[in-house]
Amino acid sequence: MKKVLMAIVMMASLATFAQDRKMKRDNFTPEQRVELQVKKMTLDLDLNDKQQKDLKKLLTEQSKKREETKAKHDAVKAADKKPTNDERFAMRNKMMDEKIAFKAEMKKILNEKQMEKWEERKEDQKEQMRHQRKLTRHNSEK
Image: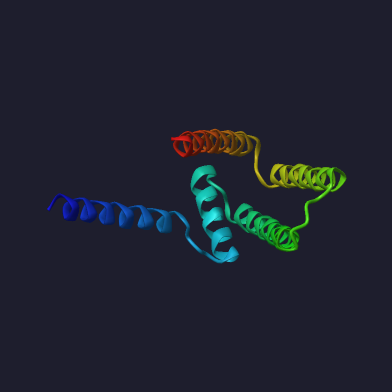
């Protein structure tokens, strides 16, 4: 009887865990993700129509670049090749250049107050990610 009860409890917890993981990963298209991101930023930063249009264009370009980079990375990973230090440096350098360019474009779109709020949100997100990584590492060590 105890074994049956224990098996039922384990099955229920596994099913719940599997559902939670599925719910976290929404498989939206890049266009859908951009649309949701623009709407969220519109709510947070009180964007006008022109800002929304400009932001949508910028985020769409960024999304395309990200997809291309991911495809290249996946191809290298599938070939089981490891990049050299110089290649890794070049990739990181390119990524930083793209971040600088993105921030410059955001400064053109947003006013000062919106820019400050956007940067605050970005810092909050970074902090949340650090916290999540810490929790993940802590849980995996157990």
